Amino acid sequence: MAKTIPITILIGAFLSVGYLSYSAEIHKSRQPLPGFVYPAPRFPVESYRTKHATVEHWLPVARKAVAMKSSGRSGALGPIEQGDKILIVTDATQDPLLLEAFQRAMKEKGAAIVDVVYEPRLTREKPAARPGVDAKEGWLEVDRWLMTRFPKEEGGPTPQARVAQLVKENGYTVVYASSGGPLRPWAEPIKNIAGRPAYRGYWLWRTWEDGLDKGNLFPTDVHEIIDRKVVEHFGQASQVRLTDPQGTFLEWSLSESEAQLWQQTALFPNHIYVYAYQATRDVAAKDPSKRIFPQAQGVVKGTANHTGYFPQIRIYVANGMMTEVLGGGKYGESWREWFGKLKEVRYPHHPQPGYWRLFEVALGTNPKAQPPTDIFGGMGKFSNERNRAGVLHISFGAEAEDPDFLDFARKNKVPLGHWWHIHIYLPTLVLKLRGSGDWFTLIDKGWLTVLDDPEVRALAAKYGDPDEVLSYEWIPSIPGINYPGDYDRDFAIDPAGWAKTYMDRVLK
Image 1 (cartoon, one colour):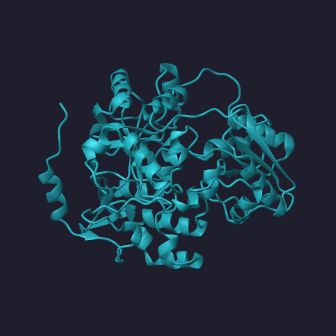
Image 2 (image 1 turned 90 degrees about the horizontal axis):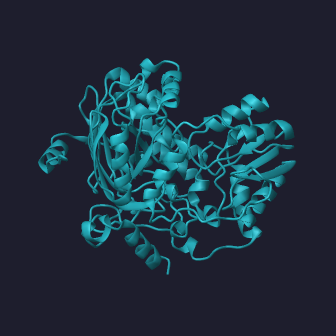
Image 3 (image 1 turned 180 degrees about the vertical axis):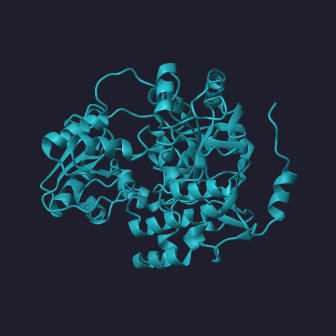
């Protein structure tokens, strides 16, 4: 049977300690509706009322993007040098007018050529667009896991290797590809095969809604200081606690040496590794003894993943391992089926049996990031919402890069990477600081508190009013939490239905 965490314990835990945070007036993007404590829903309605359809409209956006320094994981694409030969790897969702605007802007900056190839076959002819997964079918995230996380039979070259060969044959000096995940699987093959570090980062400018997404043009230097400020206190943490109004409660402890290693490995742009098992994956590739295995305890509750929505799921966790799955509709049914099949797998260098380890608690840090409106048409990128500052996404699954782990997974035909995500929209995340015993509030009801840091605000002031530069563009509507209604009746059983109704209403 699933065990609940008594509410008296949660309340007592928070009332018995003091909390440290940045002092600032309540920002307008934190203001709740009357009678609520969580920030009111926000949506950039005006920018989505019209689908712009000219290259000239997109040119100012493209010129700004190519002038900004790329971080690899943002919409900034610069610097572009005189004579650069550029390759863009995109897909069938690509808006041709947006693409043409970027090609023109790149050539204005001095690019000699700007070529385009389309996934999955990397052809120069755009394939016919095929609708993707509708956001009401969040359970189909399981298909992506089955396709990408199990060992594959040896076959032809990977897409990354094929792009690297194109770079070698055509002399490309800059490559943009992918819209999510680690950069290394693209950067290393291109450098090794083509002999040059040509991979610049993601290509996020695909649909007309990407052109309207202010998160794609958030200032790189401001974003970088936000990321650095987020991890600033990690090395002092002895305990981490996460709660949210949909019912999530997780906590885990860290030794002094673990906390210091966590701080050194946690910074990945716009995807901060809050959980040290994920953070130490790369350093453990050469020395598995450096892997940290936090013994997290609690429950994760949510209604969305990288693919879409599902009825509320409850995942119980003990000693860092998943122990039970309740609810979740079809997503939960698939999870329970695979839980039984993989709970006894003995991965090398892992202290407990089972695939179902808590892998990830990752933090978005871009205040302007937002999901598209076309999530119910099958063409929107639902996972964009995870990039917004203060939103966490949690996932499960054993994952490592050391040869023993990879060889074991291939020989035994078991998964070699994580998936199974849950998004946490309005979390509160606190760190207990070693020595003083004070608790530092990193996220407060969804608000990333480092946005109140004086240094962050001073740098943001270069680009305008820091209140505007750092404000959230999007906050979801959740009945009973930050919007009138009943959570269980109006949202938890059919979050997609609520989201569609709410979005239709605000976009009228």
